[in-house]
Length: 348
Image (cartoon, one colour):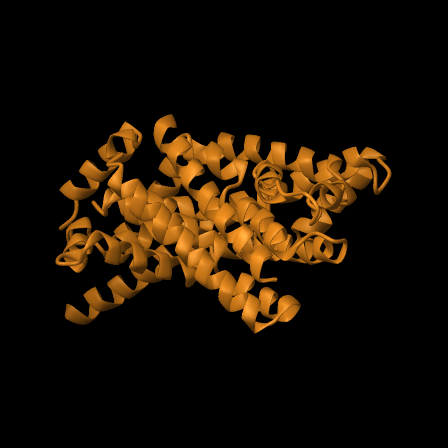
């Protein structure tokens, strides 16, 4: 009888894993072929390569499914991981630590999580649900897209180890300082009500004992809840980024952000915010801008604003945060990036 039960449990586990395995296979197949699919769709339109509309459409057709696929996968993984770490256990791990220590820990955690700003938001929501202070969650949200292994490797290869280390240090400075200042302002009341309701529900289920089946089901549930709430904001944000990508030429940017303009750093941030890219996409562009005469500090401020303060991220956050907190977040991070930009321009 015991043997039969063991065999039955093994068969149940195998069948439970079949659907996620099949879906992962489809996910990989789609993700690896996004560029050919986008190119094929563009070719069907009859538009000429190199035209503004063509490149804007190509960007949109490629980026929307890419971000959605990444978001679904990451949200699912986070949903499964949450079943192992209850909010009570997470809060216990932070007991006895000062808020500033929490900001530092969250920023360092952001460095080792290779997520773009959009895909880091589910983890941000998970932090809030776990009862972690709002300032600490922002330190993570800022650091995760801005400082990751992709940015480190590309900066090392293009600019050398000194620039890489200074960038990491200043990026951590922006993330830690921004999170700590947001904590001082005590802006928890400006988090969307539905996030706290989700937190309340999570707390009630914190000590639930999970099976393999329930963990997998939890992942699908989280995907449905979170992606269902923010997918439209992602599409709108990428559409705005696609328009900027297709119609704003690099020469125009380099002329506006030349070394002779004292306002180049804040202007670079204003130009960078509507754009959308990750570190891998924007760092090669930064290298080209520097070659065309843009100062290093201005170019890196532009890069930081694109990665860590992009309009798509702000639009998605609108579903999670209320406007006063969003404006505070943008203002504090922008101020930190301005300091970094002028600092780089001063030493280089």
